[in-house]
Image (cartoon, rainbow, N blue to C red; front, side, top):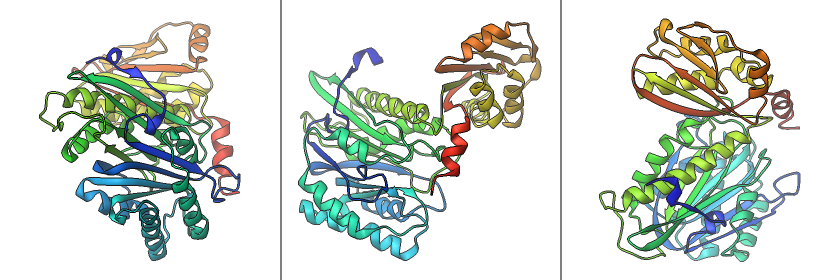
Length: 405
């Protein structure tokens, strides 16, 4: 299946049948913007989630890991502006209280509610505001509120991140929708800071888990803004099955089609996160080919993508290929310097591990574009990997220097 078989649809998480959402202002954010979101499916449905690998995982992650362990969810509740991370026993109590409040408003079991939080670390949740926000959100649930919910999960994001696609399996039209937030503290090791994917395809819990892990491995797990893995990362998939049809298990003929659509939606959201990296001016695709293994290709690509020297060179439109060579060398990937080839934005700068003549003016013009490709051929195998990142600007330092002020 190609992406040409997928038709873009609006609505984000409410694009598929069977879902409602809401986004409200509870007063958590100093800006007065929306900060509590609900995503609700009509009945407890097959679901799966992946979470941060951080050993400092926040209470919402701990609670949600437990709640999704049976492979079913009815709702997701999210607050922005406060991460409820590094908050001890009180944080655990508050995360559970969010699930209980949501369940009470919806008339379901608290274990069918997944909880997510994002924002400042180390500050107790303002539970009076959050509980009021949950009640308001439950009252405002709507079939077309995907955009509003996506707005309510933002922190330093500069734009709302939603997408969706429709496609056919055995004559039935299915939809996958999604929303995400993320701008800084991004090298997820599972997903972006927060991402929520919905579908009306009749997936089983096992299919949700298999499809989500396949998608995350080559989308959210291939992005980096600053090499930092959040305490609160999670990516969730819920399948309402509301479009009808027979259950799609991992071995079913339609599974590959649905999995492809889920990966496409995750990929679009992942690239949005990188494009919106704090202070970013450019989206950078780092493509490593000719590696001895996919693991080597990924290691080299991440070494390049995470290098502050590479990222600042791209910000300054400087085709300083020596910084890329440096990053390759520290990556632990198998390398023969005499075989390395480096191309910046379509301009060959290094062949056989040594410089080749190129026009600095042409390179500067190419690197001034909004999207830049760095392509490296290691020449020692046939494995490849792509990692997406962004440049490192003066604005990144300002945003993070003033984050709590």
